[in-house]
Image (cartoon, rainbow, N blue to C red; front, top):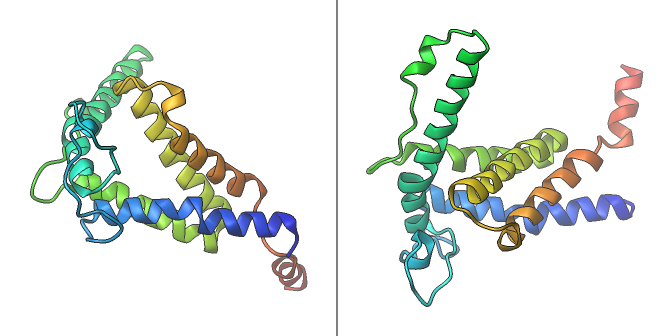
Length: 183
């Protein structure tokens, strides 16, 4: 394993494993601080804590942040399609919801994070792409819906870069290439 391979392995284990913790909180598992209470700062209220994306914060974001943002994107996309003359009646009543007791949208995002991370080991390019797309969506949400400045999104940009690095530079091993050639 060369330097590139070691760096890719380190990326998959260290920063990109944050997706597993994030998914655990979305699935309401009491691990890694997921069970801690809601930090008021996470929902724009004053407080002396820092948001950690725990389960309580994820539920609040899902209900009051992700849903309006996603529904706005759907509405905007539908309007753009109509401008282009595309009639898509199935989109007219399409909407996203995330509410108690099941928080389906939150759990769907958690499932995407788990599948993306697992794919880093099975199909690195696909896993890297899935995680990069997920993080690009998160950055878009933070900057457009929440009004966050790029300098406040260091972790999100780091995860995007790490995911893109795996997507761009991880490739099948030479032994896998040899097997394809001999088959």
